[in-house]
Amino acid sequence: MATVGVVGVGYWGPNFVRVLDELPEASLKWVCDKDASRFDKISKIYPHLKLTTDYGDLLNDSELEAVVVATSSDTHHAIGSEVLAAGKHLLVEKPLAMSHVQGKEMVDLAEKNDRILMVGHLLRYHGAYQALRGYLEDGSLGKLHYLYCTRVNLGKVRRTENALWSFAPHDISVVLYLVGAMPTSVVAVGRSYLREGVEDVGFIVLEFPEEVVAHIHVSWLDPHKVRRTTVVGSKKMAVLDDTEVTEKVRVYDKGVSYTPSYGDYGESLTIRVGDIWIPKLDLLEPLRVECQHFLSCVNNGEAPLTGGEDGLRVLRVLEAADESMKGHGSRVMIE
View 1 (cartoon, rainbow, N blue to C red):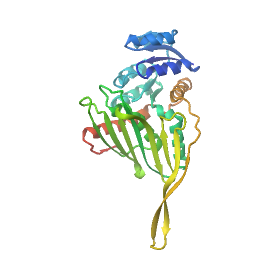
View 2 (tube, rainbow, N blue to C red; view 1 turned 180 degrees about the vertical axis):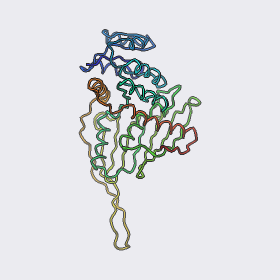
View 3 (tube, rainbow, N blue to C red; view 1 turned 60 degrees about the horizontal axis):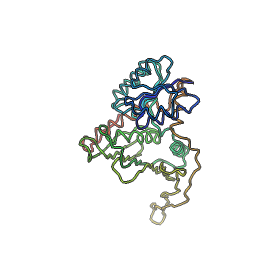
């Protein structure tokens, strides 16, 4: 059993507190936030927890083995680095940091101190996305042609980080997971409508080897809440709608068949429309699975699925997309 603390209980942090307090693999001891007013609700639900506005109290606790950092993205590098330097294992929310340079510093620090560094790329622990990856790996969908993700909503407007840095880490992580490769180039465009210099909407195109292409649309200025990923293969197509409560994945036996046409010594294309399959998935809460995996890594010395290197790959794509967006859609190559 690992003794754990949580830093940051604003938007997402309370969910970590809830899950970690429930898990038998964890002994949740500390909760930290610079805003003490957030402790009112925490103290009523979890009266046994230690509360503090200074995360230094966690770092100085010799009994504490691991820390979850769920603060704003621009603080991940500073707080996360101090956690690792203090000899604690670290689960940090996405993105790992606000630059590849910062992220690399954290990865090196974790390696130097022999500590676990895990990034909260939550959808990698989502059973529906794991099912999509399985369909690609076993050939059910055929050869991957292209995929696209939509993550839009009305609200959660940020003052500093744009929609790309706020929303896109989820989908970039998913795309890299599904494709199983890094993109060769990135093109992105975005616009600031509510606050100058903070893009409310972003459109990203990623090009991969073997002519695979991916598109990501993110926005907090949209009339609908959409959390959808579509995968198009040579045999079948699949759609994952994360707003659905139970039937999250649908596989469509649709495609285009190539058949010889001996009359004109060429080929003909035939549209194929077959059945729609809704697989039964055993869907556990992704955050619970993520926390259990982190605790297993801490307790058993395992390498996390979304470790520091995974976080760095997402940062490389984010930085390239940001560079392209600032260059009005210029193509940015990724080596």
